[in-house]
Image 1 (spheres, rainbow over the protein chains, first blue to last red):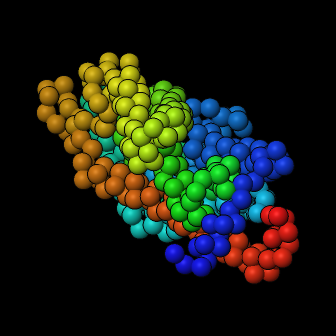
Image 2: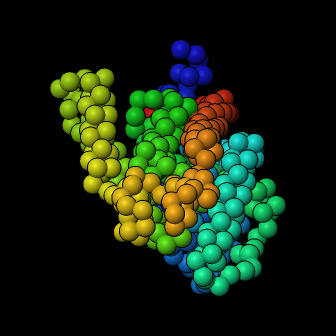
Length: 70
Length: 286
C-alpha cells in the first residue's frame, strides 16, 4: 500500500447528507433534466411543443447512446 | 471534502468523459449512421415505387431537414455526448457523495465501482433487452412505446441493484463479504431476467406484429413486391452489429473515463488538503 493510499483512505470521512442536501438535490435535478433533453424530449414527449430542433441536433448521439429514436 | 467539491468534480470528469466518447463516436458511430440513413432513403424510394406501381399517387418531396446532416454528424453528436457526460457526471457525483467515507474503499476504487454500477444499470442491462439501434431500425409509430419500455428497463435495473445491495448487506455478517457480493450479484441477474422476460420485445408491439408477424426486433426485413420477389434488401446485419458494438464500447469508455478521472481528482484534492491542513484536520478529528 502506498503512503498516498493510506492517507486518502484514512481521510475519507463521510459527508453528512443533511448539510449538503441543496448541492445533491440540485445536482440530481440538473442531471435528470439534461438526461431528459438529450435522450427523450421531442420524441415521445415534448416540452417545447411541436418542434424537433433539440431532437434533430442530438439525433446521432441519441441513437448511439441507446435511447429510442425514430 | 464537502458535496460542492464532489459535484463540481463530477461535472468536470463527466465533461472529459463526454469529449472522449465524442471523439470515439466520430470514428466509430458516424460511418454506421451514414450507412443506415442511406439504407432508409433507398428503402423509402423503393417503397414509394411499389406504391406507385400499385396505383397510388407519388408523394414526392424529401423530408424537411431541420438540422443538416453535416451539423448532426459533428457538432450535434458532440453536444449530445458531452451533455450526457455532464448529466451522468452529476448523478454519479451524488451517488459517490452518499457512499464516500461510508465504505472501506479508497476513493479511486469507490469511484470506479460507482461508475461500473452506473454503466450496468443505466446502459448495459437495458441494452440486453433493447439494444441501441441506428436510424431506419425502429418505426416512427412505436416511439412512444419504445421510450416507455426503455425507461422501464432503466428504472427496473436501478431497483434491481438497490434490492441486490440490500440483500448482500443483510447476509454479509453470516456468509462474509465475498459470498454476500456473489449472492447480491445473483439477485441482480435474477431480477433483471424476470424484468426482461415480462417486457415485450419491440417486434411484438401491436403495430409491428400486425405488419410482419411477431418478431424479436424492429429491424427491417427485405421489401417484397406483390409477387413476393425481393425488391429491396433487409437491413445490413454487419452495419447493425458494428453500430451496437461501437455503442457499447462508447458507453464503457464514457463510464470508465468518468470513474477514473473523478477518482483521481478526489484523491488529488485529499492529498493536497492533507499536506496543507494537517494540523486543522487532526484537530477536527480529535
